[in-house]
Amino acid sequence: MRKLMAFLAGLIFGIGLLTAGMANPAKVLAFLDLGGAWDPSLALVMAAAIGVAFLPFSWARTQRVSVLGAPMQLPGKRELDRRLIGGSLLFGIGWGIAGICPGPAVALLLTGRWQALLFTLAMLAGMLIFAALERRRG
Image (cartoon, rainbow, N blue to C red; front, top):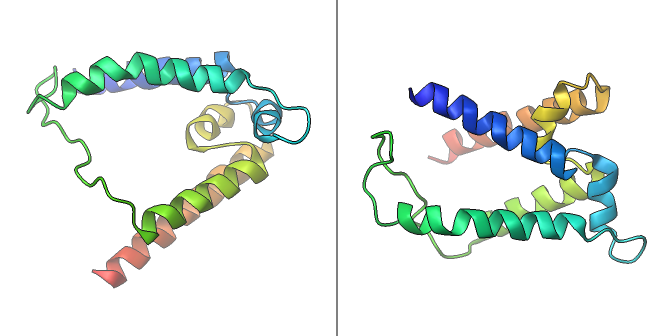
């Protein structure tokens, strides 16, 4: 049941990304272009997502297990550090260059575009490098 629910949640998320235009790199880059032809529509999508998620996340903070009985695993750390800021900067730079972030990249793989494949391979390489560095660190 958990795998089915995860699949359905991912499917709904992917459809939402496609419908909202967040998987369209040109639309994303227009949103990030504050000095040019700025397209604020993705800000509305983000605000709506925050609004929809607010109540479920508030509820989740008070629970020990999920609706399906899995342990509730929410981040406990709340302070900013160099690693979080550095990772956020790298993510933002990559998003700004490519106009793609991880969720839409997976959805874009189905389009057959070579750019989506290249981005996804680079993203996976970054994850492997991070995992290797974490093993060396710990």
